[in-house]
Image (cartoon, rainbow, N blue to C red):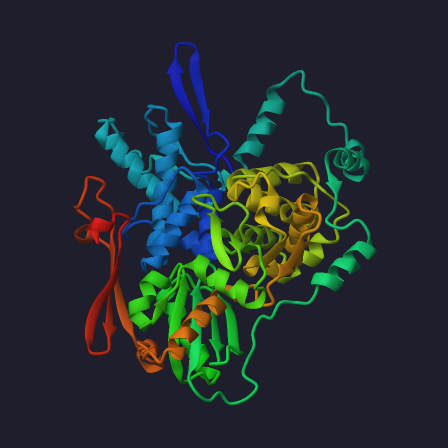
Amino acid sequence: EDMKTIFFTPTNDGVSKQVYMQSACSGGTGTFIEKTARKLQVSPEVLSQMPYEGLQLHRISSKCGIFAESDANSLVKGGVKVEEIIASLFEAVVYQNLATLAKGNTPMPEVLLLGGPNLFFKGLQQAWHKHLHDLWRERNVALPDPASRPDLIHVPKDALYYACLGCIEVAARDAEAKPYLGRKQLSWWINEGQQESKAKDGSKGLVSTRAELDDFLDSFGKPPVVSRTPRREIKGPVALGCDFGSTTTKAVALSPEREILFSCYAPSRGNPIEDAKTLFAKVREEGCEDVGALALTGYGKDLLTDIVGADVPVVETVAHATAALHFFPDADAICDVGGADVKIMLLRQGTVTDFRLNSQCSSGNGAFLQGVAERYGIDLNDYAEKAFEANSMPALMMGCGVFLQSDIVNQQRKGWRAEEIMASLASVLPLNVWVYAGQFTNMRAAGRKFVLQGGTHRNLAVVKAQVDFIRSKVPDAEVVVHPYCGEAGAIGAALLAAERIDRGEPTRFRGFEAIGGLDYVSTTNKKTICQWCTVNCNRTFIDVKLEGGEGRPWSKVPLEAGW
């Protein structure tokens, strides 16, 4: 969660020390790497062995973990290999440490790399070796003879425990150090003292009584529909809608009468093309052979539209508004909380009049809740049950996800348990959604009927927090959860695809055989760097072997003129 550098400089009186630490942000730390790797579905065991050397590097923000995740998402969208993204993370971490903490100083040999990330991540060690040797070469640092000093950069096997060893050394040298008081005081603090502190600083849990929980579950406890398979053989063309999100992929098939024939909801593998191949194979297995029209939405839409032959690329806000109005035509406000984004749409007479999106910060999203649950070893499906066990909870801060993560660590130090922190995290989500991301100062302006959708609202702890927050601001509010909250985007896309069938327009869909057998090559190297302006952005070209020849339907570069 933090990073620090210590420079030892020889002086006439011995050795002087200069200590530098980063501010509140976790950019450049182990959390910075782990959070992004978790989003890419890279396990800790695999991450520890992933290399840095010999891989193409890409620009990833080194200042903020949230921005780094967004950059990683864009690279995944462009088909960049996960190995290259992880190597770029190692590059960003070393860059951030040298840029932020060196303060103009040169880390002179010998250099000691300490802490868990430096010990466990092989690729991070390689990145340090490259950058430090490059720095010494640039600044003409005289290095010892390699024969006498073969390694000038050390990673001790006990690098994880140097802070503990330092505490022992300091205590041993301090003549006025207080004696060890035994375990009695510690036992009192664990059993009594911290409870008094928690009662003073915290608040009641998400539910105060069993009766309150039962009342809530009676109203909202019906589990959202996760997957619906055909109960009979499907005849005639179907309208197919697919939502390729950052953390999940969804598909919904509608009959010409707008009946939901089939739906599926699955985790994303981090590669939109591979996600598409898997998703369409599943659709075909369920009997939806005759696709009359195909619509795509989600972050993978731009890449996949031409590859799979979609008829309608749908903007996410339009897809979600269409899905909400199909089930709740009198809705005033739609709140969609997904894995990596937050969307709020205001409606009047069935028309979107305003919408709010989280821009760069992903605070209040579902991926953050999932990440915290995983760190506690709790399955996401058990999140709500665990959170409802908390009788009290700490007051977590609203705002930046990185700062929120630091706040969670601070609350753990105060003795708050996993279920109490998870309850508080659900409780603070509405603040991040409506106040921080949505910038609402008057919730009444949003209307009276609120529709909650997006996969995050499959979590009943989040729904309870949302309902309590909305009703505290709008006492007469009617709050409903979309029956297909996770698949809402795909339903909206499918509804728009159905309109093409009604008009008798032919489909561009390439077919299941073509998609299942498509081959592609992703290229990002020096030759693909954009020369349109001085920023020289990296571009990723994806060459796809399509029926009737090869094509390059998409390239990724921030500057439109550089496509």
